[in-house]
Length: 170
Image 1 (cartoon, rainbow, N blue to C red):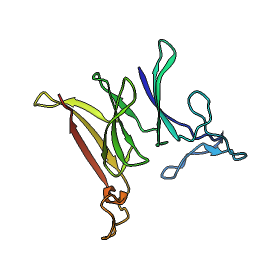
Image 2: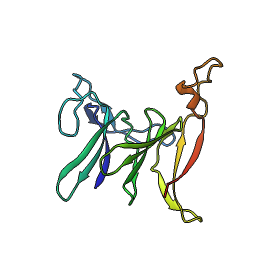
Image 3: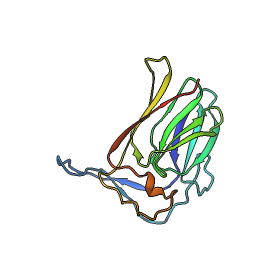
């Protein structure tokens, strides 16, 4: 199967002519403006879900399953031979694992920052399989108030870059 993460937010964009200037921001596209578009899912139906995690069978040319996901960042995911999908969710700062056969979430770890790269997997010296992912964010984050609730989302925010490594069971 081919696993993709879609962004259901619709918008029109226009390509523009530009010149690259080293050391500056660079884009050759601008928002077209006009009427607000209705967000649609992979099948073209109106949706309030900002994104979807989808499994497609390219040989049969069909969608096997599709799950709503609250993240529109389209971060890369990694699938394993043991039917697991790993991906970072920038909307909530969680590193997540899904069952590749049905899309059900199996694991979520609150890393507290953003993900830009695909997770990797490797066999360790102990012959166990590991999954590693890098999360990163701005150098400074809002300080957590002394009286913040234990489940306050800011308690999980991290500054800088962190490498997380997880040993898979079995």
